[in-house]
Length: 300
Image (cartoon, rainbow, N blue to C red; front, side):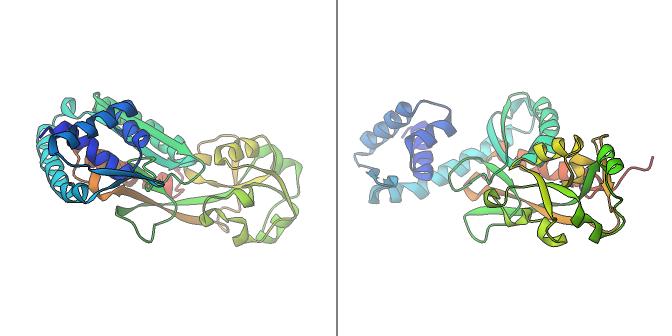
């Protein structure tokens, strides 16, 4: 039996779609179809039935699945043993993350990671929405909400802090802000409520709705840029806003928000060397940057 054909079988069984399996394997969808057909011919049995939800396993396919997964685990162990050197780690890893954390924190960290492992390719999905593991949009996902169920490995990656920020010009041109009650008379920059992708982003509810939201955006980076240009006050992650010289903290000692990033990976990927290495690197980077993530200013 050709192990390579089994790889195609496994991906199609997990994604249920030729195009999704092809994307993960970095081949054309016709190659996936051809490989699966070759496997079915060698076994003398149909392994998939095509239905409304995609390709579903037949009884023969369900019998083969645990055996193929056992072979995959054995192969992964061999791959891991041979991948201890950086020049041996290869393949592709796709990481999904929130827009702010992905763009500000992960992008430079992953630049270092790809230099450390030059044969490894990394896709970074830094987007203002939830990246869905269940749809195979990514291999590893960093998200604001811990899923209640699912065949995932889940770990708390880190807490992070958000604070109120405004531009120096805005603060000079408007009434002083000395206490929380003063915020109601000021313009805010925030999210578009009906397009929020997580309840964890409902920051304004915690301080009371301001009278006027001057500008709304689905993008936290767009909010930061608008705030720096003087549009109003915004609740921004300190790991991003503190590095912007145009911004000033507002009521820093009185108003603070803490949120948590969770990291997830499908269970079946946990023994693949490149996934384990990437997972561990992301955890190490989050730990190394705790002060930055928690908004601790460097007084030096």
